[in-house]
Length: 116
Length: 107
Image (cartoon, rainbow over all chains, first blue to last red; front, side, top):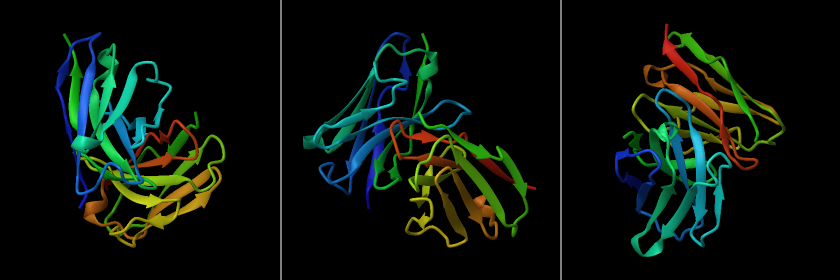
């Protein structure tokens, strides 16, 4: 059974960098899947941030492309999200997910608040 | 970006009702559409892929249809567990985009 678990700071100061990790268990991150990040601001809908393939290929949402990096660590079977120069608009629940023809496995989500 | 528009935004129904949610794309996405169910405080749950294919383990009362720009999610007989918010998502082109959601609540 594939499981995903997000981790990272719950509070980030404006202009600083948000860093989250998604640990994958029950599957190899080197499988033929893409690994995604999605976020959901409080009371709002879902926004796709981007994805990575284990070989390092990435696709990003233009809305954050200049600030975002998604990377993979095969040795730890995990992937990560880095979002620079955050503002209050980046306050959201951040989810990692596996893309298998749809986002078929999700982490439970982690809340990140951007505030001084 | 492809814009996805769901209707209605909210829907009230009784247990046992048949309900339909519509999702429209701003341009053709063939059948590259997924549906998700989300309950408060929980991650979305994957329901349907390629517009009409039920994910393993999803009850058969859920069904999806459509192609091109118009899609529907139908629940044939609402159960108490079905009251949630539903999202469509296109994956025909990047960036992947979601509809704004349809909140289904108990009448």
